Amino acid sequence: MTVVLDRPYEFVPPYRGNLWPTAIQTFRLIDWHLRKKEAVLDFECRHAERFAESLQAGHGILLAPNHCRYADPIVLGWLAREVHTHLYAMASWHLFNTNRFEQFALRRMGAFSVFREGNDRKALETAIDILVSGERPLVLFPEGTTNRTNDVLKPLLDGVSFIARAAAKKRAKREDGQVVIHPVGLKYLCLEDAHAWAHEQLAELERTLSWLPAPGPGAIGNLVERLFRVSQAYLALKEIEFTGHASTGELSPRRDRLIEQLLQQSEERYSLVAKPTEDVRERVRKIRAAVSNTFFAAENTVRDPATFRRDAERADLAQFLLSFPDEYLTPGKITDTRIVETIQRIQEAIFGKAKESLPMKVVIEVGEAIPVPAGRPPRGEADPVLCQLRDQLHTMVTSLSQEATLLA
Image (cartoon, rainbow, N blue to C red; front, side, top):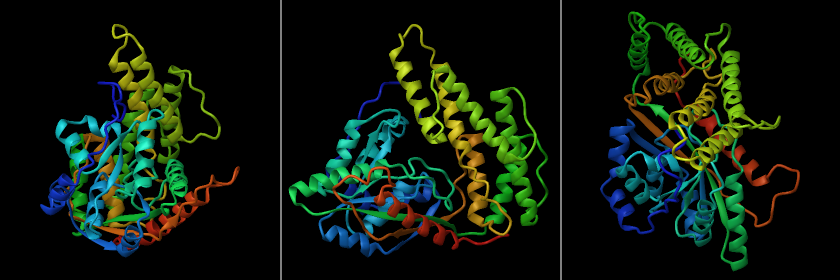
């Protein structure tokens, strides 16, 4: 659950020293972590010289990668090693509330917290100051959250350009050089045949649903059919859990109806009214904020954490269901990585954690530097900086997606 109800938000600053980041790189601790925890065994950096040139020029640098796996912030350590630098990164507050070791490790690797359920001025000021000082490059994920759909770029949040412009304005006053954004395309590729792995994982999911697993790996068509059946079963279970009954028909409209019902249930509880222009992510953010604010404003004797957690779970589920794109398993476009990602999303839904057991390689591609002007974007028009960032990321993600093995 991404809403923390155990304690009120308290800003977690980054660790400013170089001793720990240097030790982590020297002893290859990120390599160990990625190999053991994420099954990411290899990497390839492309156009790292673009990043290096911005470092040498003394620019304030914002790295803006697509965000498809929990491993993404860690794999950027390989890019940092390539150009001999360390990084800072903004990370959601809930990540600092797992255990003390992870909070310790996150900070030592340069992470600092952001409260996504509210206006976190301290996190914004920290991010802006990092870019103004040019002390280290700053990592911000413009999609906001991970989605495990490596081939699809989600809409970008405008906070990235806001932070970059605010820093550029301060730098311009000091006549201290530019702020630039480097888009970074991340693509995970299977190092082994995914067919047998997919059969094994689907068989486990089928047993969990009390089904008899299909015999043998079978053809890709059979694999996709089984994947759709498991997806239907999961959706039906959630429909029963939150609406009382399972519906019929195609998966996409059923998914969309459930998302809307989940959002409406929570919005009614907190007297929230969704604007016609608001997308699901914005509605989810408002629900999470209302859950957190209402919980901590209530008296200890009258608030029931279980009720608030249930409301937060509804919002999380609505956002999670968005990570099943309609076109991802279209015949003629099915790749090994798309099969793996879809299975892992279902594993996260049912088991709470994906089985990161298929060896992967990550390609880290650095885009051209986007100079950030100090002035505000044109009123009533799309922000040109955000448009350039989106276009570069979309081009890289689309191109990189074609490097996966086509199955059908």
